[in-house]
Length: 218
Figure: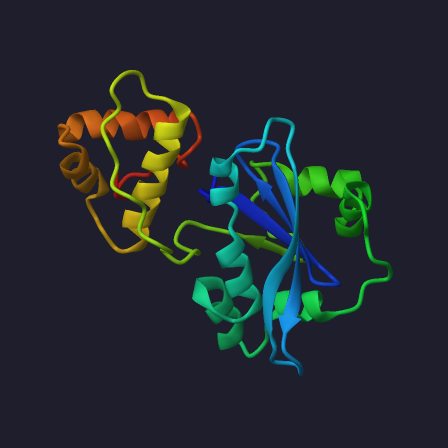
């Protein structure tokens, strides 16, 4: 299976984006609107609707790829710059087009992005084919963002909250070009590197981090 990060994004007319988490059933709908006038106005997220089978926590909100989606729409970041280098930005073109109707409910939003069969195929983690109007957020496609606060060594068992924070720090270190994130985390937490690697392994097992690959930071 080709390695992907946590989210896939589908974009549709009227500024709508559907972001689907690969590790659970969380789906986020967001609407981008122009900040200004003219064809080159910046698109920013103005409306957000989240649908999740489990309670929505601040950790879930923190990992929604708002920045990467805005960058793709505005020709910024890795994905956006790739489009602009070709002289065309299909993400922006679709978002700026007019919808046949404005969806006003989650059910209508689902239909806005395709049939149930099409969405099930697009959401399948084993499916690595880029569908029309879909953006795969691969590792490194998002900007590093703000530096996470230093990690503190857990006093007891490894909780999901700690492993989410560990994954956020790990991803930030990799995005900023650090080739030895486990060593940095070991220094932050005053913990042996071997222990930190076990934490990282636990984070991968619980799907807070994608599977490791030979030769990649670990």
